[in-house]
Image 1 (cartoon, rainbow, N blue to C red):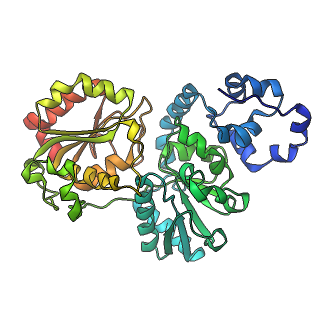
Image 2 (image 1 turned 45 degrees about the horizontal axis):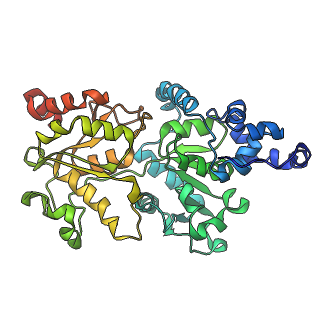
Image 3 (image 1 turned 180 degrees about the horizontal axis):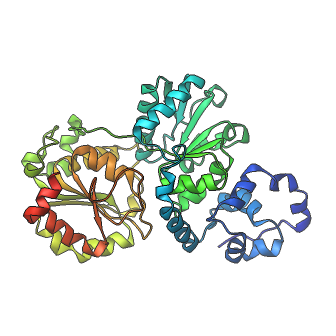
Length: 410
């Protein structure tokens, strides 16, 4: 239940300087935010007669309130998806991996040193992204270090990038970094989908930062439209034939694999000979629950490996032993013909980490339910997708039909 606002109109008027802050100006221009909808969701804000934009930035995000209506997000994503082709005419908005290198080469001339910050207490996926970004920057000639919240604030480089701000500025010592001085001189790299509580949690830092990188091209466009300097950023991925380390061989999930899938290395180009037909590695959601329970008999027909992580276990964190799970997920793609992606809800973001870093990098064929457009990776060229209810038919065709198998191996 939302707490009652105690601010009156007089105290709001005395906060006019805050209302004119850059974060408040930016959220008022953000197309997924509506002052009227915010007041409708939070009657106490309307009753207090204060600016909804000001309240959302200074109180709503911090209190964990709902900032954006899912219906509004869906409408805006639809509009941005239709504009996707036009975005290709603006390389400052959407860059591919080779353009990243040039962009960061230009960065290196101005910023020979850089710090990438990521929470030591957060999801291990974020640490992997931070390390991947460091590789890109180092190739561009930047002297870059990956650091966490325990570093000294005053020692940060002139170019500082904060990965997953919803984690970094909220966990442990990271809260002391959430200052105007840090944010207005730094970049944040948002990795969260707009409909999630984690995106709302990160919005204050996104709105206040010097600039924003976003793993979603649609979100980068959204921010640019709100006059927030933004760029779609994916760190790039390389083909690899090994994920596991020696101790992973003793992990229960590896021990139950067929013998031919237990080697530390696998052959990326041997698609026909991969011992597992279909693999999925992800966390639970009602949408996924319905799909996998409804199609259990279908998956039982094929050598399949479905790892479905229950929500009570929480995210995979780097400080715990379960960090091996991310290596096992990559390995599973490497020994599977099809790496399956099922969106957790109706918002069909292109899920780069699972589809590219894990699936395509391991030489697996990625099959997904429908995705929002990606500026460079195209369906039926780089991956296959279809409506969720038709995925079993698509998989059948790719694994059984001669023309489907030929398409799969291209």
